[in-house]
Amino acid sequence: MNLGTGGPVLNAIWVALVVSAVVVAAFTGRMEAVSQRALEGAKEAITLVIGLTGLMVLFLGLVKVASEGGLLRAVIAVLRPVLRRLFPDVPPEHPAMHAMIMNLAANMLGLGNAATPFGVKAMVELDRLNPHRGSATNAMALFLAINATSITLMPPTGTVGVRVAAGSAAPFAIWIPVLIATTASTLTAVFVCLALQNTRWFRPRPPEEVAPLADTAPGDLPDATLPGAASAPAGPWRVGLVVAIGIALLWGLARQWAEHAPEVGTWPFLRDVVLQHWLLPVLILFFVGIGVLGRVRVYDLLIEGGKEGLTVAVRIAPYLVAILVAVAMFRASGGLEMVIGALDPFTSRVGFPAEALPMALLRPLSGSGAFGVMAEAVNTHGPDSFLGMLVCTLQGSTETTFYVLAVYLGAVGVRDARHIVLACLAGDLAGYAAGTAACHVFFG
Image (cartoon, rainbow, N blue to C red; front, side, top):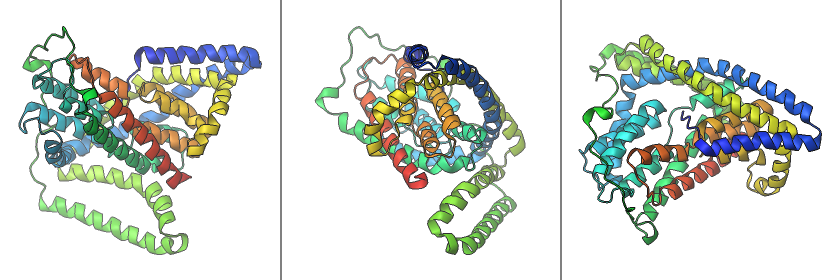
């Protein structure tokens, strides 16, 4: 989960929300409500963090078990031939290729903290192949377009945690819509990037007086190596155990299907039984099974990875307090009602509630800010309302675009981003559109 702060942009947004709330309240006569909601917003933020912590600890631990058990290596094996075709200008055995594979594999599994060092390493190595230092190469542009809109195979842990804390009856129901949205986002970003890279408007234009990046010492950046040592192949009894469990699950699912599907229909059964109730237990069992096959210490790794969940929960607490207080004040003043009333006639025509606009506008700028806005919307409208489902899907389906670009381009001193921003924003818009459509199909 990326917690990019958004820098001066988020600062301006936060100040504008607070100032607008107080000024509007002065004219609407809601100053008492604004005062009360400011205190309640701070309390709700801490309550939310407490409810979120348990799920963060559990799932970050399970992801570490699966990663060390061999899931990350399997994803890398799939990505390697694909990336060799997408990046013909990068030699197959170049360090940049290996770092890109590691970064994208980690992102796909939701290992954001592990992905960033590999991403920086990839950019440094790609810059060594750059004939125009200071201007992004085609390989850099495509890598960042994929990175900033990465398909996420795992459920968005933080978002699901908010839904659990808010009392959702089906906290994992957004997983499939998020997967659909991130797929659309990545495919769109790649298509736009490839379409624009050779146009005359976006040719490499090396800025003047940009000094070449000095060679980086080997110890300055992390080695692009796999987490954990490669384990010995699983013995026959381990494979047999996992296969037997899988057969038992399929048999149980078949029995449930025979009992309920003829009465309620195939799609309602898949949506209301499989996706909402089977998904979480089967996912936990899948992670554990990967660990068993990988011959790793499942419990010890679960605890080790879970410690990171505590760290993340502590990190997001100040962000949530700040955003929830500002949004709660603005909503209590009547300012948000004015904005929604003005925009709703336009957005509702395309099936997008105006109440979700603050979330959509803030997401590319600040992961923490958007996370707070999402949490406030879920608490206000309910986690299982259509709006609650939509904002959670939007949060999980796109990345903090400008934060990612600032970190990676800044790491190699690239000033001319060429078509990268357009490709990433096109991916964000496609993610919003696909996420909204998926929510209408699943929850509308």
